[in-house]
Image (cartoon, rainbow, N blue to C red; front, top):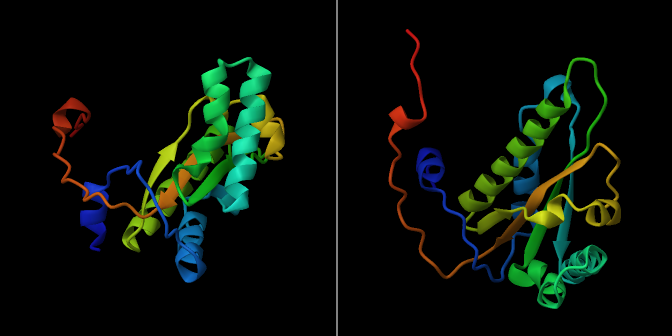
Length: 183
């Protein structure tokens, strides 16, 4: 896939089935994330790759969080099924490191760039995905279950797999709505 075509036509795909990336494909995805902009080479990220029983473990974490939150019964019942919507979920965590020259916001942005690069690497290899957040990404129970420190932040859950759907072409946006030119 041509890089510009990939970037201009990327679409999130919520319907994902097996196969998921593995072996060299998964390594390419992770390595793409590690190439994100990274001031002072702090590597301010941590990723948890969930497959098979790992998806069930993540679902149990979501269920426990829903119970602790006092969520409605339907949400509690749905929680353990959420990670099963794809054969792989990569949890993206900003592993914040105190640094005098690299503020927290920059480390969060670096981790977000890593997730974007990982999704693009998956697409370039023929896989599809969707980057989800929701309240689980900010829930303290989930953060503790995933080993987050006080200042860490879950930036989301990158669901990856294969889709039977054909991606539609994205209509270009009018740049004037979002861009100012100073000349």
